[in-house]
Amino acid sequence: MSSSTAEEPTGKGPKGDETTAEGPRPSEPSKRTKTLIGLTILAVAAVTVGVAALLISIMDRRHEAQDQYVRVAEIDETTVDPAIWGRNWPLEYDSYQRTTDQAKTQHGGSEALPHNPTAEDPRTVVTEQKIEVDPRLVQMWKGYAFSVDYREKRGHAYMLVDQRSTRRVTEFKQPGACLNCHASMTKIYNDLGQGDAHAGFAKLNKMTYAEATKLAEHPISCIDCHDPATMKLRITRPAFENGIKALKASQGVKDYDVNRDASAQEMRTFVCAQCHVEYAFPGEGKTLTFPWKYGNTVRDEERYWNETGWNDWTHELTGAKMLKAQHPEFELYSQGIHARSGVSCADCHMPYKREGAQKVSDHQVRSPMFNINASCQTCHKQTEQEIKDRVTQIQERHLHTRNQASQALSEFITDLEKAAKDPKTNKDDLEAARAYQRKASFYIDWIVSENSNGFHAPGEALRVLNDANDAARKGQLVLRGVRSADLPDDAPANAPTAVTTGTPTH
Image 1: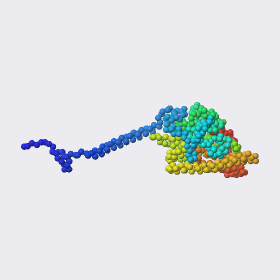
Image 2: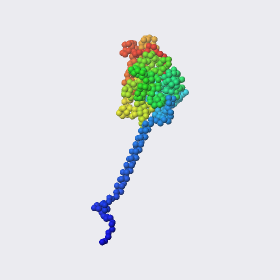
Image 3: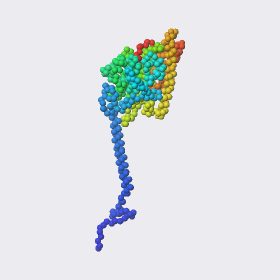
């Protein structure tokens, strides 16, 4: 027999594939298939790395947002300098520093004007004189400090230097209480009262401005609105604590403690209302007082001042006992739709913004017209131009009505000045006319000194100006022989029968 080798049979399969004894052998993957497989592996790896990086970033941002600040500096009740607070809260401090910016809106704001510094006024930049734009203000305030110097407002960074430099301070004796709204006062009150802010407040009220201003180093600072231990908003001005307690009592709320009872959203208005209000310094203690016993409309405040017999000054031209309004932004805002809707001052003037992963309140404190997207469009869905046009329309209608009321008062003062010099003028008519001047002037002043040009409560602002116009024209009728008792709504209610001596307000 012939022998044969035990070699494994080979051959081709039916489709030409190589075969073995066990069956067909699969062919090697093509180069294209290998390339696709490699690219798929790389893509999956890249996606995996990207997703992992995204998750890590999200976790980092989450931790960043939870860590509100890194404690770099120790802050307590004696830390007045905002720059030290800025080490812990650099984002807020950065925007606070921008309160130095000066820019005009269509009907507001302030443009920087060059100024030659003097010993009394070292400023190199000032703002427009309102009494030069409208000389009727000089006539309205004749004999009072505001008739010599009344400029457009600047940002919070300038509040102390502007007060120290105004002729209303350099040429007139002012009380220490004026400092309440123009400097960081928390530590000053606590130091003067040895830990009791109300006691320190009482002491400072009795000082002259020249004495009190030596205690101040900074304009409003972080400590005036924030608790250094918790960063919660708080009220640090005793005058507002007293005022809001009286206001709440007039609404039927007894024993109101603002730092205990106010909500976080209310505090976003109340910290501003510590200063942006009407006030005076009545009594021997020159106590800074907010006239809110009956409420905080202009009529409520007029009633309070008349009832207490308060008088800011005697008008130089007419001899009328006058009231000077300050800056009642809180009062007018309180009568408007934004207040009724729960919108706070800070929602519009210090809106929230994003800085990286953090949500912070913008501390630049400026007109909403400079930041319509954040200030207005969170609620209003109109375009920026539509919102601007609406604001312009409100303010132009307001300014038109204010001009009409101011002209009526100016003509009335001219008539009353002549009547006061005429010995034939009936004394009762003269006093009735002076009461009308007091009313008309206070109402117009209340609007002029409020810095929203009517926007905070358009309807209420127009009502106040119409009442002022009405009082001025009725005063003229009295001088022409019409008895005040025969006029509708009669003379101003609760006109003072005894008038106290006023202290000029800054």
